[in-house]
Image 1: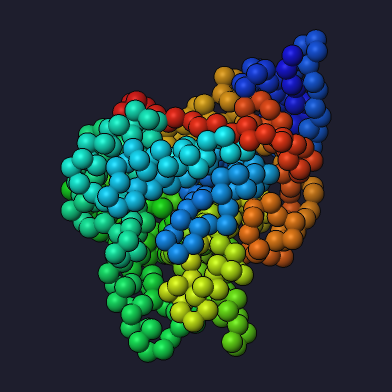
Image 2: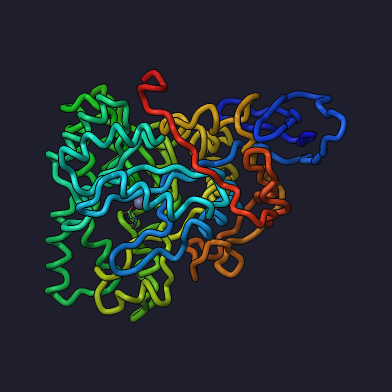
Length: 464
Ligand code: URP
Ligand code: ZN
């Protein structure tokens, strides 16, 4: 017995066409007309788009920052993901100082296994580089973790030095791993933060002032040069500036394999969010790293997307409640936990503000939120497209329904959304995860956390 989705318009990164889909078990079995077999459930999706399940390659669920833990864990975060059409997330398993990568990975499995409502994988964030860790990178690939991350920011905690970056890139090249980098110059930021506080500047707006665009540009151009010396590909996470994008374009022109990701917050919001009424702490809601930027940066990022210079749009979902968490920094902006929610609304925000507003095509939307991440991170063709044989991760989007984003009716477990009041045109109606309907009429219909761990292929296994 299967399921037939009837009367919809299938969208992939390259095609849009009217056709039915038949699902059996976890897979798409056939695409075409007159597919029904006896006993099949027929679901009418007339007038709707059928998109491949979205992939968010950048989330932080159940992350302990040292001073607090993210508001969303894997249970609430993946529920929010699935209701927003994201059927796979890649979270950052993070090595604590002194820990092996294996310990870091085990910790993240404990957080995610049997608690997730969408499928998931992990990147491994390396914070303590040494020869043992270098050797362990190969073990990670055997565990289905062929991607890593290093931080060039967060001095004295997560930040690693250039020697470690270079060595990791060389090892990555040897074993077929892709390494992502948080590109901000942590030393410069540390100096600026100390200076601001010494001058009594404690308002949330100083979070942005002490993390200038040049700190991102410098780190991006440095890591690209390190990648060139290591003869390695490199992935830039959460790109936020025009200048950073220019460094990426320059690196690509020099033949270096530079891939990049941006996020809805850098496309839809700007640093005026830090300037709320006098005496207000509201700007803390937007304290994230990198910070929100200027209009000129937003415009450049949209152009980068249109010119295929940016590969993916992730969320960097890292949620903290305004009351009880963000307010730890009421007297000191540097104590505001960094990060904001977004996993629930990415697809919808980009459909409305990208596709409906004519900035990108619906095929671009699929490429940026699903296919490109699947290809880069070793999930394709199991995930990232709609084709016979792939996982039946399918999002039914009703382009006619209008609604409004609001914390009041969100699933993510946090007391605000940066997109409060954003009008949406087009709503995710149904979601199928490996053939199982998990969202019906915009409501979760599974009691059980049915998401599973998806081991991924390395660049070598993909033949790259
Ligand atoms: O502000 C952010 N982005 N917090 C999450 C950690 C990171 O920097 O990605
Ligand atoms: Zn992040």
